Image: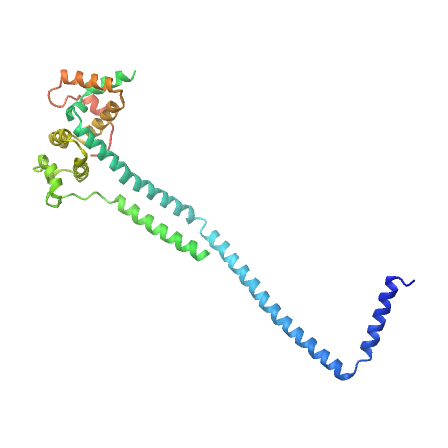
Length: 128
Length: 143
């Protein structure tokens, strides 16, 4: 019984025998087809490499941008944070102060009661 | 992507700088003639001294006038009666008064009434506040 290796060798022999006996017209057509396939493959490879390079360039640019702006990014965050605090102080605290002023002026004690040291000492003692 | 981050950062910085500049600007004086008729009506007791007042005090007074509509008629009457005395105080005295008012407000109603009653029983003559208390008053730039 013929094993698999023997069978494979026999097939290879038959194929080689077939190719050595090809006529000139057939070998020329095969060569042209191979050349055309190779040309197409090289063109495709070039486009692929270009795309890869472009991606890499973009990525590196992103990294460069981050490293270049490593210093001023925290500064930007700081400036924005301080602006938010300043805005909050200027608007929210002002509004609160005006609310307090309005209620204080409208309260049933006159203004001089609130600047009377006795009132604050009574307030202090009432806390204890 | 990088371009989007750059654009967002630029505009954030732009608005942050602009708002920081805007808030650090000094408060501009408010002229009596520029007030709304309803504000003028509320602030009438201080009309004479209005243009000589510090700009920040003017701003706070306008804030008070804008809250006038929310007050009851009795509160409106009291607020208007207090305006002149309020304008005469120093910024430190106003800060001290606010502090006392907040503390009084935090007390339970019965305790609050007790202190008010006590003060009414023996009100001071003028602004009863010794120098030592002025030194203890919170130092504030708020007018």
